[in-house]
Image (cartoon, rainbow, N blue to C red):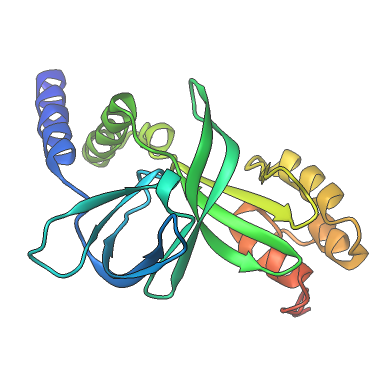
Amino acid sequence: MKTPTYLVLLLIIFSSYSARAADKYTAGYYIDSTQHKVEGLIAFDGTDCENFLFKKQLGDKTLRINVAKCPQFHMGDHEYVAIGQIDFVTIIRKRHINKAFAELLESGNVKLYMIGLALSRMDAVHKAAAVATELSDNAAGGNMSGYFTKKRIYYYVKRDSETQYTLVEHRKSKFKRQMGAYLKDKPEVVAQLNKNKDYNFNNIELIVHAYNGNLPLTTK
């Protein structure tokens, strides 16, 4: 029967996922709590927004560096900074985090940050279910995997003059209204938000880049 097969597959995937560690290292450095630069190897896959793994070289003891003790770190060309007092909204719960690591995507007048939700046990089950459901859909021609595969990725914007980080709305209607109000001092950007279908949540990085004056608003 299909149901037992599905459940067995789910358990196997979940066990594999739980055992996997974010242990792919990249050369980089971090700034410690005393503002010293510490160079070495960093592993950070975005699923735990409050910690990353560090070691001086392969084979050394692994250290877990918490956001409370590190204001920023760099992995290759990617820069991550600690931001504070942010909210996550998942399908069934709202979660507040005092401080988390976010990737700095845009550093102009409006800064843009991208952050991943630290996976709880329920989130891990949810992710495993996504894989199993996708496989089941492929075999049966269903379409349930879309519900499960929503990424735990969030964007925040902030100006230096602001004290709070603004969570970017992902729903089309709310995104247009929110960004139209937030970027209203650039009417040309607002005009594109209203008429250009590509000015959407998926292209938030390019929109903020354009707002900061680094990119043409449109090629039309």
